Length: 393
Ligand SMILES: Cc1cc2nc3c(=O)[nH]c(=O)nc-3n(C[C@H](O)[C@H](O)[C@H](O)COP(=O)(O)OP(=O)(O)OC[C@H]3O[C@@H](n4cnc5c(N)ncnc54)[C@H](O)[C@@H]3O)c2cc1C
Image: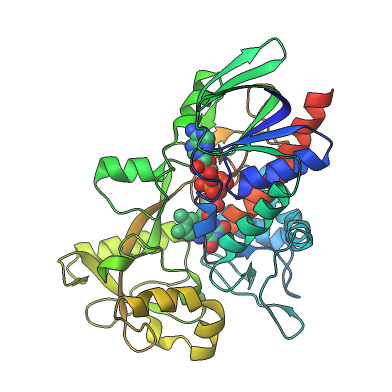
């Protein structure tokens, strides 16, 4: 079995890379660990950032990323991310994604660390909409897919690469690694809750490192400030940051606001942990540490348009977030760092590309929400195109 480009992973970044490589004329194979649907991308609710507002610009967006990363991101990657964001949104639309609109434009929310309203949404199932649309494109094309075929070995060969994916041995001139992060595995090891899907175990990064690829900021894992803490069916759920964008605030046991609820993620997470450590938190009915997220401040109209899935999930657990405050505590969520890439998404090993959560640099040591789906599309497209061009050269 032989391809020009082999893509590993079927999340937003892998799908974007596969579609782009195919459109660049390459014969493409896509192997993934579970079903094609299984990935973190499909769980992403909040949205995707792009500077469309009149008072916004890609430069402003880049400044916000830079500040949120505490000046640790790779500025070249950040500038590509933000300058190509509007184009990536239009590309998604051409491929079937319909973003929520209002007043003749996109419905935009302000997310943590952002100085402008910049978050586009598809209700609160943005990642599901993006992966469904791109998967439909892949399935309607000649891209050959290999579900339930995890990459276990990768070695260089005379024509490029030889990969073992489940029962298949696959040759390819170039390989795009889009296998996501490792937070599920780390959470299991630490005995913590996690927002991720069980396939987020990180072995592909280790395979790449074994092939000589370098990493950066690999120790920097992100806690989502607002993990669901109660009821039990919401434990490990990431309460969308859009709750705070639409007016919810964090309160301690005395009902006091103790932090800027729309600060950068790491700052908000630290503030919650500190508040609880100082004895100002609350306890869930099953004894977990928490603070309150006062979701009763969200206007019903906003919630119905931008948080319908979250409302449904909580109400199924017997709690109406528009009538009562909910319990929240930080939860392991995202791998900030990863494989070192250049502006074409190539790792430090020639012919081996990486995009999405498996790659490092775009967010430095602290990612802003809404920039991961964006990274998947911007760098997934770049990786697919560059891998196709190198394969044909
Ligand atoms: C609950 C939740 C909410 C989120 N909300 C947002 C949001 O609102 N906005 C935003 O921008 N970001 C959000 N994120 C982050 C974002 O969704 C992810 O970081 C991003 O989608 C990762 O995409 P990816 O393609 O890199 O990886 P994934 O989507 O995780 O896909 C990785 C793929 O690789 C496969 N794989 C893994 N190991 C192997 C292997 N050995 N061989 C073959 N395949 C393998 C997996 O099965 C999967 O198909 C959220 C994340 C979660 C978990």
